[in-house]
Image 1 (cartoon, rainbow, N blue to C red):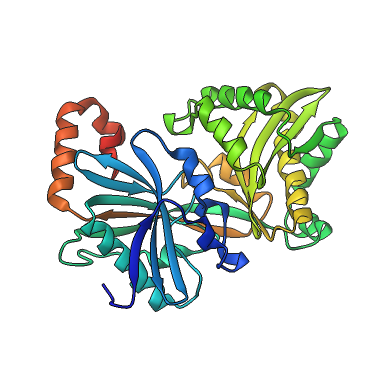
Image 2: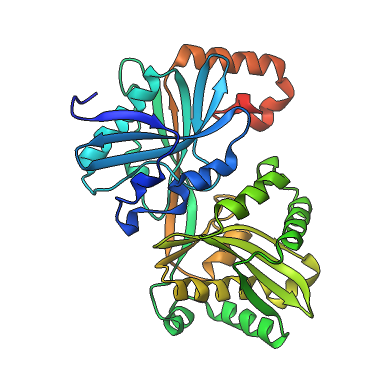
Length: 353
């Protein structure tokens, strides 16, 4: 570890983000967001590397495995973020953080990059970052879509929204669908119900189901940086989503819709009106995310691409710091969970399932 660089693990770090430029801050790097995913054996923490005025943060959720720890980026996006653009310094800081985690009983870690930050460049692939770290892999996962909301609303409409999508938005308006940005989350209970029904209809993975305490924490923690976008038909909620934002970036978080009204263009109207809302808030980029798979013909990805051709790349990182311990934990899990191997066997953190 560089003698100048000082690494530590903090359980409070949001105050450090105040020293980052606006374009290097985002909701996914904050304690108030990561704490949504805390549980009995999952704690929101941040690895910090400081060298004078230079700071690199890597927020994560720490898990416990026997006498050891692992880490994972919270649901969505994240990874390392620095307050400067010096790529060599950032690489050195990130390696120092990983060496520090290794010395502090971490076995492995799973990182989700942030497509708007291109911070996958800081995640090095290696067969041995140090004598103690086993390996680090960087894997391309999929493309995501972002609307450039720094443009005028007219320019967004003309230059980014596809002609077919514009027709669907006009259809929704012709069908008298009504959009509202609810900063008071007035329709929250209705949204939760429609979200859960949507997940059931899609046979979604358990990963996408959240309990009541999660929704309560979300509304409380993010009350100053989120809103509920709703679309109603004759007073009935037919489509809704949670949207989050920071000073520079907006995000499409969780969404649910009534399939019986799918032909009316409710989802098209929801995202278009929200893009306008983001523009009015001064947001520069509104990130829609990607599809449910990496396929170019993924239906959700194609739907999102109708809002913008501004495509980003999403990567995942897998690090193993202590190979013998990791293999022992995985072998023990496989012996006890043979029926789960076909589904979870290729995942780095398979033993969590």
